[in-house]
Image (cartoon, rainbow, N blue to C red; front, side, top):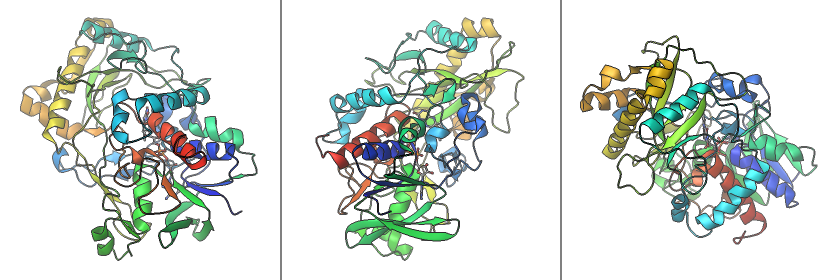
Length: 485
Ligand SMILES: Cc1cc2nc3c(=O)[nH]c(=O)nc-3n(C[C@H](O)[C@H](O)[C@H](O)COP(=O)(O)OP(=O)(O)OC[C@H]3O[C@@H](n4cnc5c(N)ncnc54)[C@H](O)[C@@H]3O)c2cc1C
């Protein structure tokens, strides 16, 4: 098969891109490093997502030691299976704040992307009505007792307030873009999906990308195509570019990789959202039945009232999420203090030309003091919500962490450095403007597009799966219809 287009990565965006290219009559070779087995109960049952980390479907990335987080190496789970990170994620559907897209460049204004979200939502089920766990009803009540408004639809006119989350679930099972977009065209003769195919590098002819090289069970194969679309995610896409000689000449030179295109910003501008656990023991048992995730409510709020856009998004879990050093209660809940407009930015760099070596991922978490301040406000807010009667009296909720570990502002900051974890929203490493143009074509290279979370120049105000799917739809439009799609 000599496809029209090679798509690398069958994750959230890659499945959308492949499907829309097939719809437009193109032949597609879709290469995925992980397996095709996304129908295990651990993936399909939304209540079991916590069982997936550090298994065969997780790339299991670790950051380099984080200087501002007590030198901890943070786990960054990423999906390695058809469905990508959507097969591992919390299934929460958030379009983002309208102003998020203003800085993305021509073609990306809210007026232009809003209809794209609506189109995706006509393919990708997003459920808003489900059997909410009573503890989430109480968490929402507690947030309102603490002065927050209830927001029926945070994907509507305003994000602000406490809400029940909207979820990508169908009939009690996780619904990824692999199922919603890819599965309906699986039998189309123009589509070939090759799994366990780890792409090592791009094949270049001068400044033209003419194909890719991959490894499958120790066998190296190559294919050429008129277009290559990288959908390997915010870690995978910059890594493939760097290994292909597209990146910072200083890095490539140090690793003895010939420079194909000097683009210093490949792998820079890594952004993520951050979470800090506020854990409560409850007297009443809390158990989530199969078919729904433990996280069913969240809130959007501001660390400072003068901010025009929410910078906090605590998410709430009907279970005690404790670190190994913490005491685990018999029953509990966790209000995860969430920062969603971080100032700290980092990098993704290959460590060597050897594709077997893990990349060096340095998000530089909490390197900006503003992030520590905002997370402190988020922790304070979660502590206040947990102390409200709906939880204190209704469930016997008692704060376990940070509790006395936040007795002073300095201790609170220390607790944050000790417990901060990823919110799983890495973006920005092949950013529009820096690495790709607004049509997602890599600067100075012909026939090469990047279409995944890596192109987002600023991390959206909210979870990143819906924006990644939106990027996939836009990319396919750029490739098939042109810039006005
Ligand atoms: C644990 C977790 C929870 C999350 N919760 C939520 C949530 O509730 N809501 C939300 O909106 N977002 C959530 N996210 C984030 C969201 O899932 C991601 O932003 C989104 O899936 C990114 O899509 P993508 O297409 O950029 O990358 P991915 O979906 O990660 O897809 C990349 C694909 O490329 C493949 N790949 C990578 N390198 C190669 C290579 N060299 N060769 C071949 N294939 C390769 C990968 O295996 C993967 O399948 C979560 C993420 C995680 C990990």
